[in-house]
Length: 247
Image 1 (cartoon, helix red, strand yellow):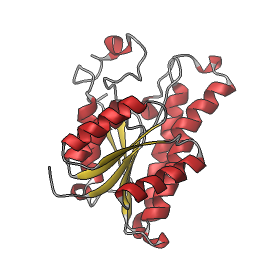
Image 2: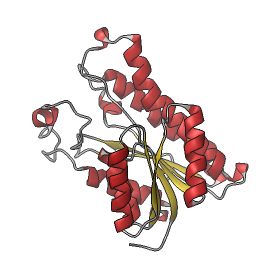
Image 3: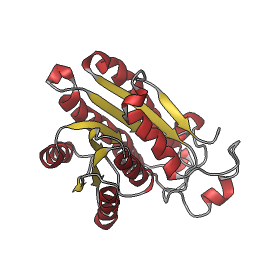
Image 4: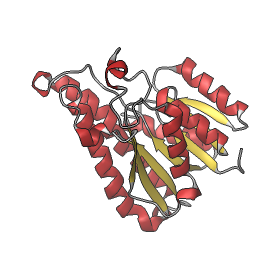
């Protein structure tokens, strides 16, 4: 483990890419706050694994699509671990595969609220604490998007793709907004990754389609996240990095 880097908050950190990122960041010297909404047992296991890597770690329950809970989340992390130096804006959801003509307003509200509204709320809370314009010491925000934002996910998840395209716009716009305030904003677009976000059989059907002819592992995405959160990426902002096997 490297020398301590500070405190990082990972939203949706109890499983999948969020869990892998939490472990990679702990290995990289961060103290880690693992946010979860419902999966307390899974979050506790991630915390234990972070601690085994030498990090201080806590699990904090909050629905990051709710502004009041986002504020409580940030306040809890700061009180228990200290000032937050990086935020991994990772919480996300998909609905069952379907065509746009089949979507209803309830589905769209859920997907955009969890994937897009939450990303804005978390990013805003992070800026209010990190930005030198608000009295902060600077920091890094890493927004987790999806390669679907570029590909469109026709016939399956066009709503998810659109919600993540909005996250890409957030990364670009916010990076320019706070670049002179000590805050860097970056993004990661994972491709087909071995997590439980996929419906059964989807990875079997599509996993060999990237040029690298396999799905990715959460740990492969996590290593890029850890790099972007660190000072190793100090001359990067406003950039979204594809981790998609060339797809």
